[in-house]
Length: 120
Image 1 (spheres, rainbow, N blue to C red):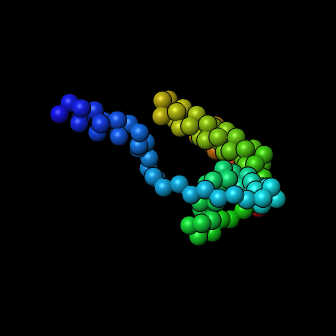
Image 2 (cartoon, rainbow, N blue to C red):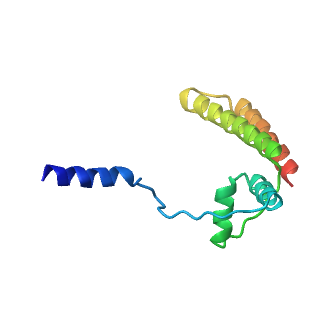
Image 3 (cartoon, rainbow, N blue to C red):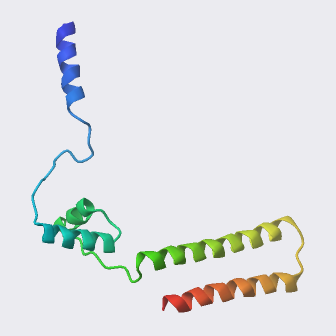
């Protein structure tokens, strides 16, 4: 009985537990791979993920901005979120002069508007 348990356990060890157990392999030329790689990179994806999405019939849309521009936008949005959180923290912890608060909101609104103009 113990030997039978060991055989079952060793079979379970050999089979990796995968979310997607089936694997498909195929070969492509250097040119084909380069096209796939460029398309995947444009969409900020790996080549296997890109090919899988295409095989599923997904309609993949090229981003409006390149990677560097997207990173800049993320940093700017993060800064705006930080400023918003700082304003909320001050308002929730102590009395704030209404004029001072309005100046901060106006500065924040200007930052958002500038970013919005760059996106259009």
